[in-house]
Amino acid sequence: MARQVGVIVNRKGIIRHVILGDHHGILIPDISFYRRGLGRLKGLRCIHTHFNRNEGINTEDLSDLALLRLDAMVAIEVKDNLPGQVYFAHLLPPNPENRHWKILTFRHPSAVDLPFGDFIQELETEIQKSQDGLAIKETEERAILVHASQHPRFEAERSLVELAELARSSNVEVLERIWQRVPHYNPAHLLGKGKLREILMKGLYLGATMVIFDQDLGAVQLNNIARMVDLKVIDRTQLILDIFARRAQSKEGKIQVELAQLRYLLPRLIGRGTAMSRLMGGIGGRGPGETKLEEDRRRVKQRISSLERELKGLSKGRRERRKHRAKEGLPVISIIGYTNAGKSTLLNRLTGSKVFAENRLFATLDPTTRQLDLPGAKKVLLADTVGFIRHMPKDLRVAFKATMEELEDAHLFLHVVDATSPYRKGEITAVEQILKEMNLLTTPRILVYNKIDLLAEDKIPASNPEEVYISAVTKEGINRLTEMLAERLPLAHTL
Image (cartoon, rainbow, N blue to C red; front, top):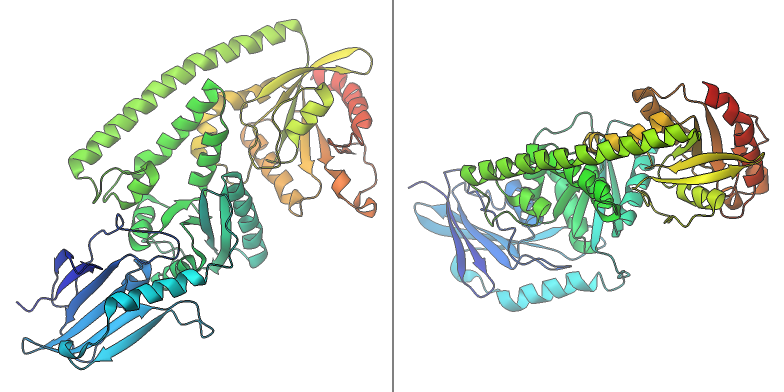
């Protein structure tokens, strides 16, 4: 037939797939649903034919071996319809030479004297031994973080630090951070196959269960990468959506998060189901057909419409409450700032509340309003808000539009900044950019540098009439802040 043929065989010697290719190669089917685990190989080997003499194991073979975590990749040379040399490639455990695989050569299939069962068990044991020294933490996932962009290294490192904090907020242990400067993104899978292969080998050696990309992946890229690597694959937006899904407590918050998730998912319901099974917990083993995909799209669109109607009703109630507050005539102060700057802790300190506060990104999602008594018997409403972040997912901002609209009622902003953050200037800029997009830059605001209890005394700048330095934990600077609020509020209230 002049076509290459291949078989996928499990460790019991049972043939799981028979593959008929063309003259140049074969296409390995979706095997993502076979065994996986920390330090474990796939439990499958691929045996196939080659027509080109002395080609041996080629680059595509090695990529499939690594990316799919196969037990072995075996190529049998064929000439004049008869078998010739056999090339046997397998992965290696971590080694000083940093070699990822080894290729054995046999003159003929009958000369293969490798006791495969014992060999592969010993290899897998060696790979697992390399993980014995790794600390096992009570986390849901173990991830490798990947950043690819044209930005200079310091920007990439800053972004990876934030991505690592996002991962921690989602109970993910970060094993490795990888940065690559790329002149342009690969439209098929963001990075080259060689880099993806390197990432997967690190994942195998470190016991990773997922790869998190700092860049947002397109629908095609997400599907292609998930098909290529034997790990879960998500991007920055999915990670943020997961955090929001965990933290939302109110009915409105849960609806907003689900709406954002579905809007993110809808354009990604394309093609094979490997990536979607990892997004949605499984939509079918080998990928849905077009009929199934159309059915999924229709259901998602119907659910989005239903949630939008429900959210509209809740937003109406929120508007009524805002009108009622306006009638009472109490000025509103909104606490804004980058996520994890200490906004909820400050609200608790000023009002004596017990709003949930934690040293994690996006610890607070549901807005909270409390009454605050200022010097001079002034009463105001103090509102906590969702934290801002660079590159806030568009779907989240649309879903949380009704919540963010409450900022429009504020007479004064308390812009809380983490004074210990080495990236505080960029974080201030990110917050101001979002305010600009919402046409709220004209609202008066006080810059509040928080967490000064964690700074050395010589690192605390001199006082500035437009700024205040505080510690919401130790109360340092709190009296000065309330005095500033009492002074500034009458002016802000008249605007």
